[in-house]
Length: 295
Image 1 (cartoon, rainbow, N blue to C red):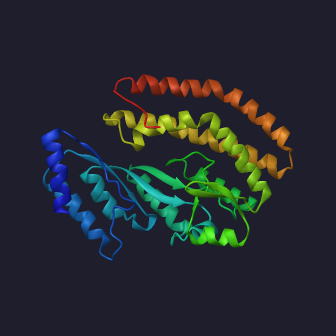
Image 2 (image 1 turned 90 degrees about the vertical axis):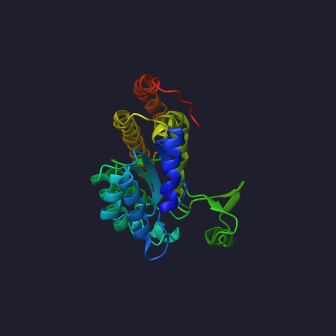
Image 3 (image 1 turned 45 degrees about the vertical axis):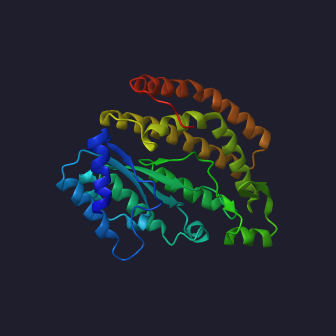
């Protein structure tokens, strides 16, 4: 812990860096004393009166109210957390070793502390059912205060994974897009929903990532601008969920692909002025900084 803060202090005082991202799948160690190191890092930063801000990644079962309040006091402002699903069956399939209840508890702890939360979420996997689509939609609506990815995010399967081997046995693998395999979804209604969500996100994902990038990179250096960017991101998320709900409902009601496609085109026209307004707000804000998107 001391060595880590020594590095932060060196970079801060010698080069003037004040924003840091810990590039690690989990900020916490996997052993039973995982809290101690995090608290020691926080205490070191606080005792040295370092004026730094940082973001980390973690698992939901490491989100502890006391630990994160200490980290926030030390400068933690953003957390990427691997939620992945609002469905217990999916979490079990992913071998996450977590529960939906833990997901909800972790997200609300971070929200109550005022920490920007980037929620890792996988909306589709080979076994997703229509009922599970409804469950996930409900979960996503309940957690709209979090940042998240585009709604067409589906599970990647890699060579050697236990799930990939299972899909090969079931003759479900349809091809390969290196380094991942492609697969069909067991429920054809869900496959149709995903197909149209992918088309929708082709339309808006460039702007979605453009809005998200400064907060996730991170690149913004003025604290007062972060709530504005978060607001723009959440507006896009809410609209994406509305489209998701519409497509899911149309599939459940048995609408043909042609009708769904036509309705999707109308939605694109309807949302164009909204996207333009969001992008204009973003450009006015981000114009204050030297900024280049990494996307």
